[in-house]
Image (cartoon, rainbow, N blue to C red; front, top):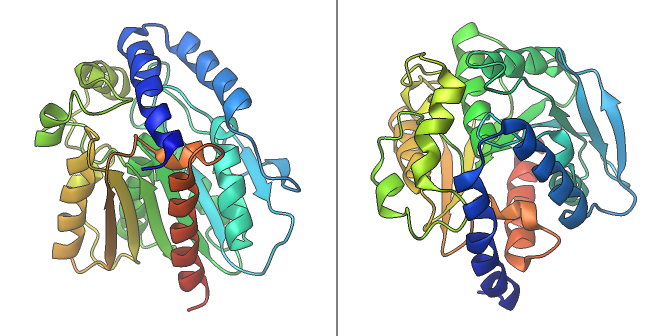
Length: 297
């Protein structure tokens, strides 16, 4: 464990976890995350950002200084389906784009509680349909709720017979909004960011009474037969640990080539701290190697 990680963990526990445990106003939560992203998530020099017309609400296109022919990375931000935006995650995607030499697209999707389920999966599908015929193909990904959204999108693509992406990846994905896994309870104290006591509130805002086991909301219950390779990573102290473990088992039983990396004592979606943590940069480098291997098949 790096010294920076040793310092970051208690900071997150004392600040972010408490903030998320107490926050009541989604709009204030969004403003806070946007401000912190500008302060702490520095971008890669030479990266170009432009407004994208992907999907019904556009998004941000990320282009590294040095590019090569290949697939587009279509990435869905996290934030419990309530907060977060392409702007809060663009710095992390800039590093991944620089490592792979590939462009990335971060679509906007509608957020709860103003726009509950199924707004987010509908918007994700529309964004994919706008780029699915791109020369070189598409690789989809996301983190936390955005990781669950990417997996949900993959299941929708298969069910509708659309052109498949080359692969799908997710950081600490939320795959089961029934929140029935043991790690929700067992890691409630050890998780340095997510307050387990708020998962019910998040589900209520997002689902608005819709069944939590709908596969578009909880991809753990979706069918993935015929899916391309999937890459997941999660920390062993996260409340969402079992979301990745159970998702891995589910994918494997359906014949999917899946890689699941469980890291020790790393916070929820640690790659977003890529300007601070060597562990974050290492994970992004490992993911970049996996993406490169897919794009050269």
